[in-house]
Image (cartoon, rainbow, N blue to C red; front, top):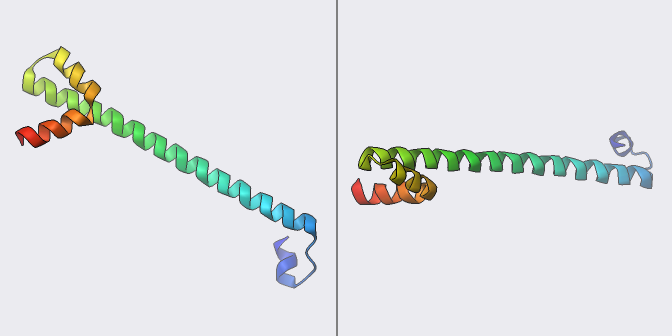
Length: 86
């Protein structure tokens, strides 16, 4: 297909359609890889924020129920603690 364009040969409509389909498939693969990367980054950020909030809460208040509650708040509690106590 590409060789026909480089050599100056006639390009058949079927080959143009194949080129378009190949490019479209490549774009979809790139998008799905980006989506997976974003999803895994978000999951890691959420779990890291939850762990950080629970550790900060437990060291500050020595209470497991408060640590669980603050873990549910995640990054909100981490930012609150940072702004108020540091």
